[in-house]
Image (cartoon, rainbow, N blue to C red):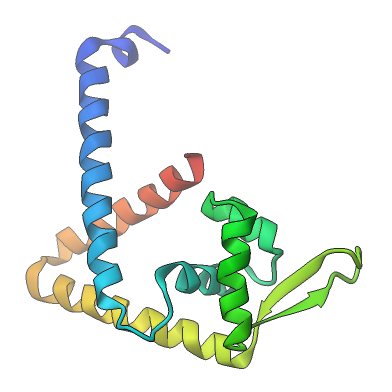
Length: 152
């Protein structure tokens, strides 16, 4: 690290940004959770379905690792999805002791419709209240936040 990266001003600015991110991401998460109606899939369930949709079949442990939660917590989420027949477990073809989760057609439909409720609200707010330049900046920020989430 060079002297500029260690400067008290930079350290203070980094901490201020980290605090602002924690607060705004928390508020964003709470607002999106409010958008999910009772009886709909929970945010953890939607997240697990979205991961399976984007990354393909996976184990419960792999999903838990990606979400940085315990395998037991992810197991409870997955059990709810299995009960609703949105995911199915099958033995791994390479290691029969491992169980691989994949989306069922109903799970695929659920992830699409679950996304649309929240995504439609976000898209509406973006279209009504943000300029094209601001939307492009938010798109860049979203990619950076994804990268930051992977590093935590």
